[in-house]
Length: 170
Length: 170
DNA sequence: TGAGATAGACAACTCAGTTGACCATATGGA
DNA sequence: TCCATATGGTCAACTGAGTTGTCTATCTCA
Image (cartoon, rainbow over all chains, first blue to last red; front, top):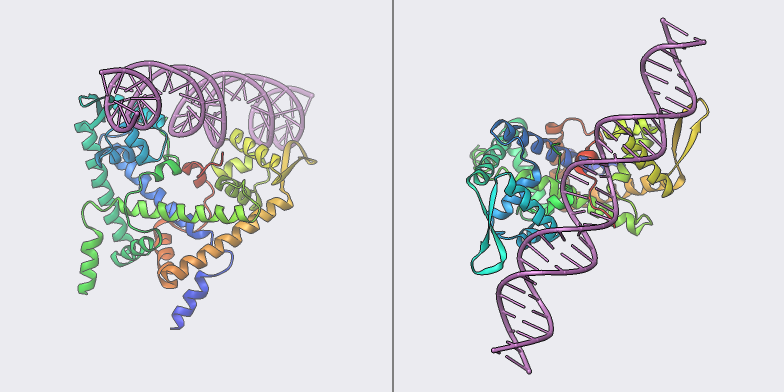
């Protein structure tokens, strides 16, 4: 009980409220940096965070520039540029929709699928290592608390537009 | 004990590793969005996340373009542009250093101090509300876990360079 | 006192987004 | 059936925030 009071005083301490967002973003940054370190090792040195969000959205059903734009919350022109880019780099293919001459349908290539699979694998490894480091229960507590704060752990692909895409590879 | 095994299975579940970074960034986003909603209400509708990081660095001792560049991990040219901007918007003043003719010393105006104070206040309010929502102990647990992951809760102002600066006001 | 280091600014570029204008194709109601 | 309108996509021009390269002015120290 005493403990609880101590906690209470600590978390509401004046002038420390700015630390929580810093901790959150530092954790995010650590994980994404580590992800891309591993993707580079596994044959995807050109992958950037924004690529993963776009491929994920496509894999989840975004089948055209307009649909991708909606999924990523960017303009259709920006989505078109992203598709052009990812196409040139071999992650997806575009073809004219036989049922609608305006549309260019998007499908992942096998390299596109491979990148998604490698990402999923690396994310799981990192997650496991985080659990080893801070403890399974602590990690489960973090995830539960953040879900309580931000709602369902749905992948919000539109976040990438807000974030800016992470580190750039020049 | 059984409980612990259940947690362990859950947190290492295959294919769910991507959720942790999504939760972290969603939490960050929520807090920063809320911060700027409140700052806008309190007379700082033009404030952007990058402004706060820069003013914080200046307040913490960065007294020139070169020093700000080091604090934010950007080029001195970029830091110079930021200072120019913040100066035009009334948050800081620059003067030639009497002791070194090359230097232009930077000091916060009272409006600059006011923005920092309003930010600190809003951060503390939001922190208190998060604690009310998910519980003091859960929040303390989140912060402890993230500190264990990312090190000391020092303000890493250089993060803003990596992040891209958050939402833009057009 | 002169060589090199340092602070700052200007110019030109990049990257990833934006808006606006436009074309080609679909679609649905008179 | 045809035409008005909606939709998917692209091109062009712009923006914002960073980058590198170059330059000047000033400082410091051997």
